Amino acid sequence: MRLLILGGTHHVGRAAVEAALARGHDVTTVTRGTSGSPARGADARYADRRDARAFADALAGETWDAVLDTWSDEPSVVRDSARLLADRVSHYGYVSSRSVYAWPLVPGADESAPVVDGDPDATTADDYGAAKRGAELAVLDAFGDRALLARAGLVIGPYEVVGRLPWWLRRVAAGGDVLAPGPGERPLQYVDGRDLAGWMLDRAETAGRGGEGGGTYNVVSPPGHTTTRELLESCLAVTVADATLVWVPAEVLLEEGVTGWVDLPIWVPPTGELAGLHDGDTSAAHAAGLRCRPVQETIADTWTWLRAEGPTASPHPERQPAGIDAETEARILARVRG
Image 1 (cartoon, rainbow, N blue to C red):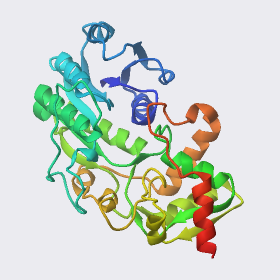
Image 2 (image 1 turned 135 degrees about the vertical axis):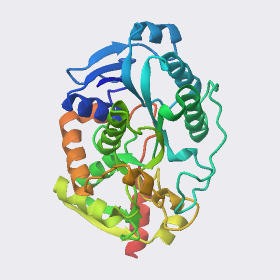
Image 3 (image 1 turned 180 degrees about the vertical axis):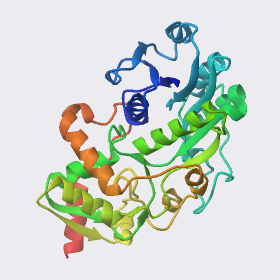
């Protein structure tokens, strides 16, 4: 298969490039060249997608069997790309987000849940959910049922640029008493970026064989794929850190103004408007072949990547940094110790 990947140096794009090359596909990437180079073996091309002429020149009038697009900013960029490729590519896979659903997310909701308004012509991305929805509409307008909308949830694993799992690994590796947000058995729902990328490639290959490769899916693990305790104990195991998990009840965290997600990455309280982030219906994607590897493998591989790439594995400068500050953590730990 001849595959065009828009992006490809970090996060899901990098995972997709590596997986596609391993499967023997002919891979072309288009990036700005600001986040490193794609994997060796890819036909790497460089252009800023906001410059429509430069992007068109980089594609040079060629055709591909499928495209995978990881864009997360203004929808108009996706609109222009989809229109340009509509007659030159058979299948368009877009990495979207469950953020397109109306807030708050309803626990147990599937792909039929209400979505936010989106504008495919929008030239800003101030509202992440609206921007992703606008991009979805742009892809659907150009590709119709040839479009795959992969509504990812929490994406972790090697190459993660938001810094959620890396924050926990580095915090645990630093040692000492580590604030562990309770309850420990809180079910978590996420997707390893490599599993997301691999599933999207599966769908593109299915489309290339004349099968059904399009559609809209929540692409995340089943609810309860792991728990907060299992995730943090796995971090302890792989880092071999001299650290102790100190479990803090959710109600104490809320009293201290800790809401989760950003200040305590991955975790959210078991009740309240954030609860649905770890309780979405993903049965359609799993029926369509999505398989999620064990959390221990994701954590071990992420730790290996962090140690191998060091400072270059820091969160992307365009992403919001994650993690509670040391002073707040110490204050809460002192409170629970009495």
